[in-house]
Image 1 (tube, rainbow, N blue to C red):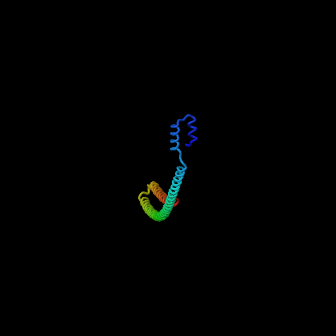
Image 2 (tube, helix red, strand yellow):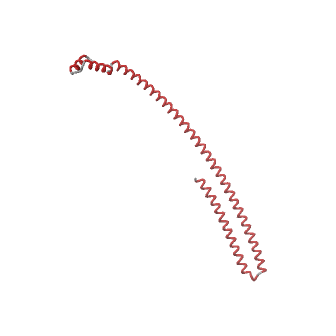
Image 3 (cartoon, rainbow, N blue to C red):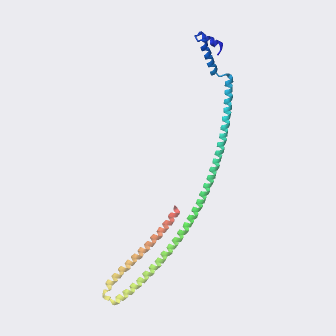
Length: 187
């Protein structure tokens, strides 16, 4: 504290002890130019250190980002390979399934043809038997011929209905197999 300040304080009623105590206090609280320069130098050093640290962190982050990008590219490549492999397997499975279905349909057609042949043979045998029976019955029972004839016609109609039913069932089986085959290729 300057001499003029001390005089002014004494003029307003401060004692010498009070003025000295105030001056001591002010001296300990006030920063000198040297203190300010030291603080400025320290702040510059701290700022430079922080800038260096930030640059280091920035470099680390850039390296980590580059590593992540590389890792993502690797994962993408793996996924593309996995997808390609899955597509190849799926195409092979579909091809196998087509082959199996074609073989099943061919077997079913063969089986249906065999059943038709058997049914035709059974019908032919049945007709032959029925004709022989009719001829025998005509000879043996000429009086009951009208009634027997009606009875045989009913049996023939029933057999024809069974044959038609079997044909219809065969057609349904073929249609179902074709529908399943088409459904597999559409989906």
